Image 1: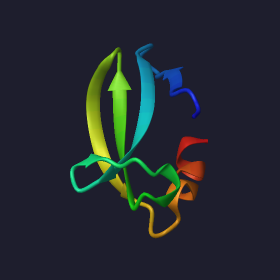
Image 2: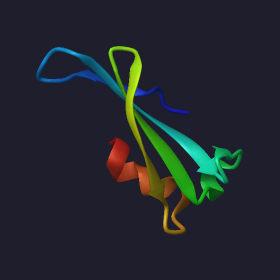
Image 3: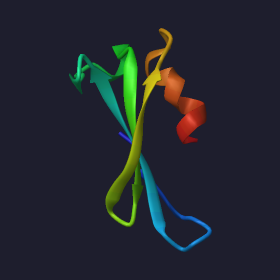
Length: 68
C-alpha cells in the first residue's frame, strides 16, 4: 500500500489525499474488487472534505490517475 500523498498548497497548508475502499457505509476489505472509494482531503491534520468515487468496475485501477 502506498503512503498517502502529502504536499503543501498555495497557502502553505499541509494537505493529503486518503483513499479508502468503501461499500455499504463501511470499509471494504477487497481493494482490487471494490465498487467505491471514499476520498478524504486532509488539511493540517484535519479532514476538510470527502467524496465518494465510483470505480465503474475498474477496482483499484480507478485511482491510478486520481492519486498519481
